[in-house]
Image (cartoon, rainbow, N blue to C red; front, side):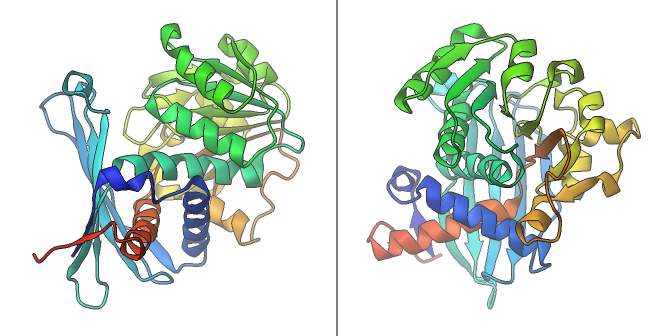
Length: 320
């Protein structure tokens, strides 16, 4: 098997490559050429950690495997980021393990790529103001991807802990854009595209906050009970996601579904827009993309990294 350590990922995977891989995976899912396996995600009763597995098989790219890992909220005391994961790839012809790839940076890049893909297809025309809800580790990746693939002129942001907003301000400055810290009503009123990336368990962005044509990428909810958006906001929006069943069970749309204000028929896989089977935004005032995070995203970026690492001599071959 090939081993690509976490330390090599930054020099191998670009935001553009992550965007292309994720867009292609969403399209393959929509064509019925790729499928995700049921997610396992459990609280282990130690260090407040959530641990799980996401896997799948992409017949178009012959990519088979899983990502193992999760969320350790107390990792700062160890000098580590909270999200920790490793991607394992397998030979679909034989079942033999073919690669182990550091998954931390890849997870950040593919998550940011997913929201950027959603903005490409769903953002209102002429979107200029990017709103950021959340200022954790992932927020900088989200902002960089959004700016790289959009035409934003200003960033506004809010975080439940205002002292962390310096991360958003610094990232915006790095990108050459002005940044303003605002409250949530102002953010909802002014932003054309809103990216929400928190670990909240109660709604932050309320229905009354959002005014005018807006696209929201809700990227933080990937577990039962998590929530970032008011279910009333979800109920009045046109809804998209990476995978419908996952969105309704562990994603942002679980809450509106539980209240029976939406059903599976109200949610469209983003891949259907990518391959031209759905018009996307259309005449909707508000669109929401629920980025729950699917295993196929991880496998796609990991597979691309393995090939690059082999070409550049940055992968190590081991027997197992």
